[in-house]
Image (tube, rainbow, N blue to C red; front, side):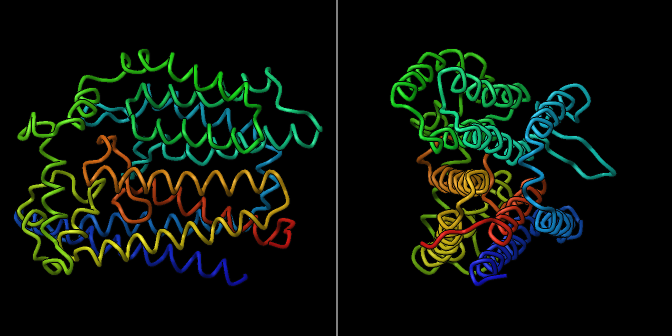
Length: 366
């Protein structure tokens, strides 16, 4: 391993253990009030972490060229999982997104984030090897490759993950030096699809988007979570109230805070400085990943790393904006920190793939 590899792993481990720290912080009081062990969610996340390490090692040791050759199979496997979960998945809170495997909930849509990156990278690099430009047929085919899993995830419904899949796919398409005329057509297609996308949203999803425009219209209903999150972050000031001293957090005023809204606990209890430290860690994660991507000559490896980098960045950006009320609540976890077990496993698989490409791929001087 080289220095960038080690730095990347250390940053991810720090983020992960910060996650354990705040998962305990945001759940312990509620669990003890029910006379349950305060470590239940931490234990579950730790089990996911052990599985994540296994996935990391698998993707580090398996030659990444295997995934390039198997991109068609990977895409088909992705669609199969997304279809099967609609029929055989476990339903919870009106959504059918999970398989229950020996008591562990597995979310195929989270895995889809990685599989769509590999599939698109495989297809676009194949065009490059054939010295074939991205013509109109290839452009349309790429859009179809992106839209099918996007719509399959929307049906579950899982708006946040669907958005991540779609935007990441479009980003990888841009990396392929797409013609401006196709870019304009893509933008036009996006505008034409907006009414259709609005219609397929569930009523509660539509309400979340409308609430974003003015949370105070429904302060005790759809705007409640965002308002409480803003209060929590704002009340932390510069230094924060101290660990386990957050009133919004320990009076359980923010629903499901240990998942998508975990950053609000950081802001309340460790203030601006705590938030700035987390943002710095993510900046370093993105910086080192970007430097690795720039050093890779191989098209497939470059597409994969840049696709993963964008996926991480987009999720982090949206989550932070979401908890501060400057983006609609769409259900996107904070990478490596939120209580989101399948997400943690997939993110470690992504990390393993990045390091594999960096150590095995052909590099160029930067």
